Length: 254
Ligand SMILES: Nc1ncnc2c1ncn2[C@@H]1O[C@H](COP(=O)(O)OP(=O)(O)OP(=O)(O)O)[C@@H](O)[C@H]1O
Image 1 (cartoon, rainbow, N blue to C red):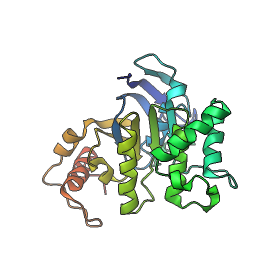
Image 2: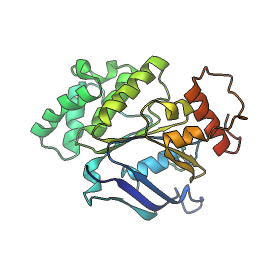
Image 3: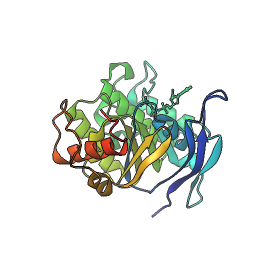
Image 4: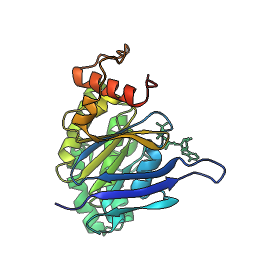
């Protein structure tokens, strides 16, 4: 089994005039795992994931692999609003991104078929990007995040726009991918923390951890006295996730 990705003492702020968004965060992402990162709006989820994915650099602190590999070669990133190149086919866009990430043309072309299969887009390989539905576009971006052989992928709010059937299919893709790679999913929907097979849950608020640990421990935090949210029908685990989150945020969650 290969090593974990470890972050130590991460500090980040967007400008000198503004306070730190992250103020000394430590974290570890195990290999071949599924992690859900929860937090209220503007708590720093996107900032943290973009640092871990190498899109931005921390002001202080370090991110490293415990097995000493080259971080840039093993991380992949799915932004909240993934861009696409109009006019290319799905196959060509993924191959192009692979080439941009340093693969030879031949290696990129060879990886495309595997990646599109892994994300459930094999049937869409010859469609042009502008004809894709939103869920297909986010799968395309996921294939791009994986094309160079990522071992850790960071997905920023990938379930935010998905209806329940597409959400369930998305989690099936994550389960399949995480047999060999670590998948970290940020979300503002506590139902994602209750999905079967999630290993780790982390809760970030105002740039500091309120919780980080196994899903079973997280669900066990649920106080019986938590109010029941009215807007959604929740199964027992989803209700436990919501109640645990609510109590970790000191009753601020809605
Ligand atoms: N490009 C940017 N320039 C300046 N400030 C930013 C930028 N991006 C984020 N911020 C600020 O950093 C803080 C954390 O934002 P971030 O997007 O990381 O949180 P988040 O938990 O992902 O929020 P959301 O769920 O709303 O996307 C917020 O105060 C936000 O306004």
